[in-house]
Amino acid sequence: MRLSHLNRAAVMQALDEFERIGRDAFLLKYGFGPARDYFVRHPVTGSLCDSKAVVGAAFAFLAPQAEALPASAFSGGVATVVKTLRQLDFEVVSAGPMSPDTPRREWSRREVELLVADYLQMLTMELTGQAYNKSARRKALLPLLEGRTEASIEFKRRNVSAVMNELGLPRIRGYLPADNVQSEMLLDVIAEQLQLQPDLELAAEAAVDRPATVAEKTDFGHAQCEPPRRQLRTGESAPAYRRRPFRRDYLEREARNRTLGRAGEEFIVDYERWRLLRLGLGQLADKVDHVAKTYGDGLGYDVLSFEADGQHRYIEVKTTAFSEETPFFVTSNELRFAREALTQFKLCRVFDFRAAPRFFELAGPIEQHFYLDPATYKASLQ
Image 1 (spheres, one colour):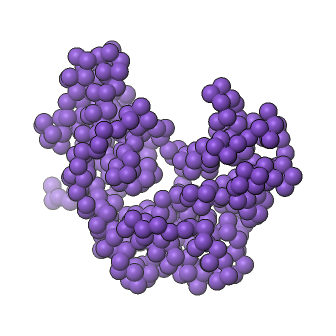
Image 2 (cartoon, rainbow, N blue to C red):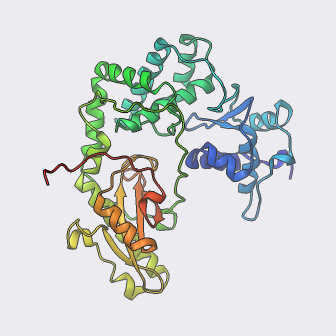
Image 3 (cartoon, rainbow, N blue to C red):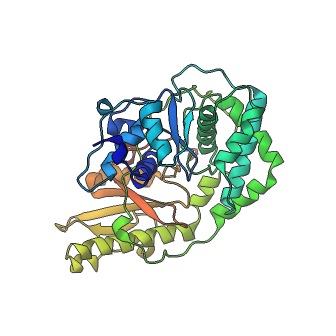
């Protein structure tokens, strides 16, 4: 296969996968190292992606039996990868190293303030359903910063996303959390900027409190996806105690949205019935039970379903209107039950519920798949 055989549709599918599973997982899956010079911009999200890795992966999407090209099969650079991508009408940026391990000049307080203000404005627009152009806003920031590249702006926005997660705030889609570089400064600046953007608080409240109802008929054949890869925790060490400057944890507030939680559970009930019917197991499909509705929330799981051999599947459902990487909350009862039920326990994380609900599933003890940070403690005198 030659680079000239590539088409725009295949590159778009590779870019979508890059965005979906994250940079590290994408490079590992296809066997490429981090790009040093050239990045292709995702035309929808505006994210910058490693150009040679995207081109190599795109060959896997040309035909059902096609395979990705390994890094050794072709060279990168202006005459090859860059030329091919530009001929397919993609924007290629010469941006310098994006690796978080690369030494880089720290951002000044003024630069961080400008970037955070822009980030929070985009987030407000996203939460209220208004369109905005990430690329245009990034270009508008460039002359205000101290010799930064577009790639450095992209990565700093991901630093902001990491702090937003830590603070229990929604984040912009497409900016997966990255190492908390300058997290203390980012936290302080975000706290200050929130005071200047009251519309964001109103938009966040509306987004997490809005009632939800049962999802419309869904193409269940495409509802389940691969789980995101758990990222290594690196970056600056956090202080032993840090007081939050916010009144509300919006992600925790969304977790208490009972209509959203129930709607997500119903979605998984419908999926499980569809799955069993597709296997020709109508009698088992009829026995799928929404136990959280039938018996209450104290069992440690929400849905009782079955494997093809009749073995029980105990499913705990966690639902969000945000992306698949959004943190969620589990109870001590759920943790204990998952350890006891082992592989019979399934955690289904439903995401993008209001737009186009999808989910990923993980089996066994929850701590095998997620970092668990203590959020609350029970206090007693005996």
